[in-house]
Length: 182
Image (cartoon, one colour):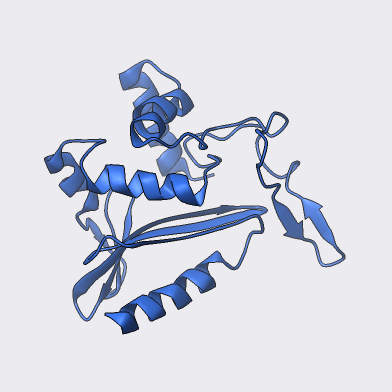
């Protein structure tokens, strides 16, 4: 469990008077037009939802008994590539927050190394001192995701998987191609 994110979720609930999942669905998913995204119970998944799988060495297993029944502040939202595209358009277009608050969120607040920085909930990659991309990522048993918006063009790349590895390597390869294309 990511206690810092969980704590932020408690603050959101206290200030909004809503459950964290309801807040995200009403204040982020709906205004962004993310109609296929949500916090769904694992035993009540909508049609077309991929089941997560884990390689246990002796075969593949579903992730159903490895995750909470329903997600929360530390993860567990279901989404699609199309909805992530809509999210980035809404965020970068200041549809979710004021321009000033969006800029604060997307500003580096933590420098991990010369290439990686962190804002408020959003990672950034810098190449040769220049902002290359914004990205969010996450994983759980049987699930992995990297969603990127490239700084110069706001082109996007999304890698969502129903296994718990591989998205990072594929996202890095996409980054290489986009960097070479300039």
